[in-house]
Amino acid sequence: ELKVEQNPLFLSMQEGKNYTIYCNYSTTSDRLYWYRQDPGKSLESLFVLLSNGAVKQEGRLMASLDTKARLSTLHITAAVHDLSATYFCAVGPPNFGNEKLTFGTGTRLTIIP
Amino acid sequence: GAVVSQHPSWVICKSGTSVKIECRSLDFQATTMFWYRQFPKQSLMLMATSNEGSKATYEQGVEKDKFLINHASLTLSTLTVTSAHPEDSSFYICSAASSAGIQYFGAGTRLSVL
Image (cartoon, rainbow over all chains, first blue to last red; front, side, top):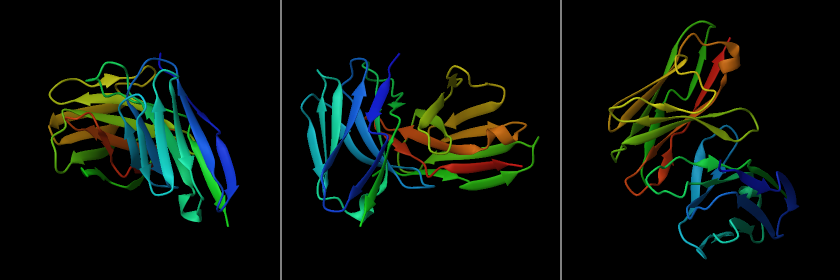
């Protein structure tokens, strides 16, 4: 059974600071997704990582994937208040074609002015 | 990006009634759609995988007779919560998988059962 763990669960940080959210998963996979969820809203796709060593950046967010370590990171640079949200990683199974995703616990991020 | 429309966005109903939620992929065909449930401050839990033209695959612990799923076309899947009770109150989110395997999520439906 695929298990996905995120760390930390809650994070409060000041504007302008940097931080990294970690996503560990238990079985082989080369498909990892990062989503953002605002309160009362659905999921917004941030990144799709499809290969070992993949790195993608959008604004102040950068995501990376290490399939050998079964680890993905979401790095926040110079945080701003607008980044306050809950961030989820999700992992697809190793056999491409079955698109079932397993979600991490989520990281609730609060940026303090 | 691809658009998935979910309707309604919020529904309040009396206990014992049934509620239908629709999920449509507006600009692509989706042979597979997924239904998730999310309780407050928790992650998404997959309820079932909906396959066009065949029976849905339910996750362990999800009652098939209570959560009826119909995927009659390549752009529409419906979830019907039958005889809803207060414990069914939750945020229900659908997603549709593109041919590239990317899931696009609907806006979600907040169900409140009185």
